[in-house]
Length: 547
Image 1 (cartoon, rainbow, N blue to C red):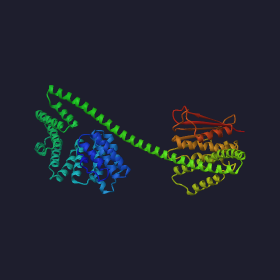
Image 2 (cartoon, rainbow, N blue to C red; image 1 turned 60 degrees about the vertical axis):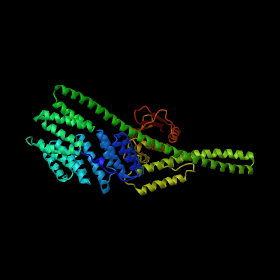
Image 3 (tube, rainbow, N blue to C red; image 1 turned 180 degrees about the vertical axis):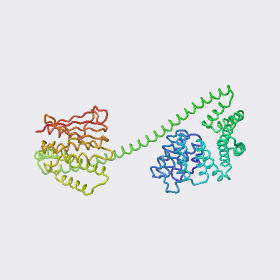
Image 4 (cartoon, rainbow, N blue to C red; image 1 turned 180 degrees about the horizontal axis):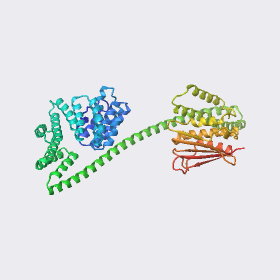
């Protein structure tokens, strides 16, 4: 099979320096360093939103993984590259073709021949040179040869031969493939003239990879006709395979030597095969682990860098916040000094104390109302917008206007509350938090069940449920929520809440919203129980008496 990746020219961009270093390491056999620099080049291209270079680097990462026979990882890289390479842009076609060829090779290695042929067809479709096209055609024909579809293979090989008359290496390869496939189709056919001609050209051109293939064909041809000749060519193949440092081809050659050699030598070759196979497997596993470690370290560095940026932003925010507080404090102190000059000291202290107490109490009340009316209400509207495919603009505006009117009344002692059709209001509240990834199930929320509950308690229950749902949406990551309502024989109203989210540890401290929920439960003489012993998710039971 042929992979044109090493011949692919890299796109001219800022990542050239990184990709050039990566190719240098590849030529020197330092694939782990090459892998590292292609990852760096990919990340730089991602930052610059350079999709061509991102796809190009992912293609090279796929080829490096494929060379180490990590076919699944190579497949992942190539499939990811497809997201960045644009078939509508002619400039991308060279890399699209090479990427589809890479997918064809790894898919063929995984014995998925049907999809491998599809990928080779796409590589042929987007090929930009005759050389690349012929190589992709050759790879496709080789699948037909492997699967005993010799007529189909010969048809493609003949097309390639017509197009490679000026390229001696390509012509020798195709000539050898044609003659060997004809012999596979008809064992009476004599492939030797073409096989020897191809070998002669490959020796003259010092094409070691081609010689390796020729010796393999010749050994297979002589396997039944002349075992001595088969052994001779198997030895030749083994020698060339060691020169090109191809572990797989050495193993193939050793398989032939085991088959054709006499007893004692056969045992020696078998022992060599076992050692080489074990060694190759160890090296592959080591390379896979090394590549995985490089990917992990690269992603960890990116994550740590983002965390550092976030910390720096937080520090800047805190510094600005401190300066603001300091400025406000100085301004306040300045006015206090002026007032102290105007007012009598004792009277000022008395009024100041009373004023501070009143302000604090008012702030607490207002803070609670802001949390209930504005914060949770706004979050609910945001959730509905997020989870709705068709947004009713007028409905959203009505809800925002309602929140606006409520926010204008925050300074008054009581907010207007209507318990008309309360079961529908509760149903709408809970369902507003449902979405594509969150399913809400409501049980027992009927008109009758709420008739025995007073309006003040309904007011508190509405905000308790709203707080639980907001907390679920923000923190739990739940995909399923169940809320059930019931009244037992002792006139105790029960609300059961359960989700499959992240849960809550027994040591976890309440946030402001859940603390407010606890205060509301106390206000209605109720009880709340958090079940933190479940394996996943959270269960809450709320109960309160009704008259």
